[in-house]
Length: 293
Image (spheres, rainbow, N blue to C red):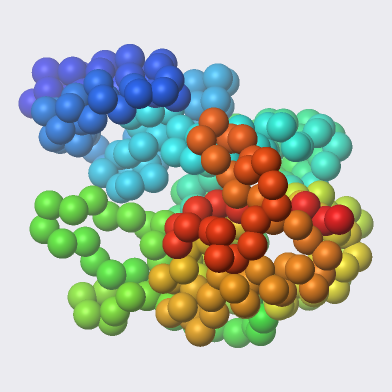
């Protein structure tokens, strides 16, 4: 068993070195499969050298944790956009922070700025806190809540994986696909406008939203903030999840247009689509970057 664990950890250290290289998955995925996706490795491990000199605690059996464990990064295209648009004195909001991939990298970039990270799932919020503290990132403020158009306590759920499937903690949502065999937890939701007022936030430059169909609801609770600061927005567009919440990409795009935003699709390599896109030009699942006019 120790040999198996040691081999798995050694293989992962090697694959992380070239995990962001285009086409590397053709090599890495067979290795992951042969080694049983970290069979024998304890549930939580600390990966050294995340984004060069950071440390991140993760679960290598869970989807996001597994991607970082084997590839060194999960949201490669979106992180490239983040690097391009953040400068060191900005304020970044990570809404749906999970274990902190965006939070940690943004905090490293914002040496004279700040990060405010929102994560409602208690277990993920605890790991996020550990990762922030472990790296000494004192300019990160954590909010153990989700964003919505209202405030209160609500249930977040995700459908449990089928046998042989990998769990994905990023799928916790106010609008799960089914209550059948679902994992759920009660947590808080707040309005961003209220948070900005209570924390006396004076600047917001970029907001990342990845909250499984609740994006439009969160934006509706952020109207004053968006009008005041006109931040850039990075938003996951998931048509199926939006519709479960009674919204759609068309309604989301119309809302952004009324607030004076132009939308571009994030493409491979972190490039933005050369032209502004409309709702009918968006695939059912993508990430969009929204710039105020």
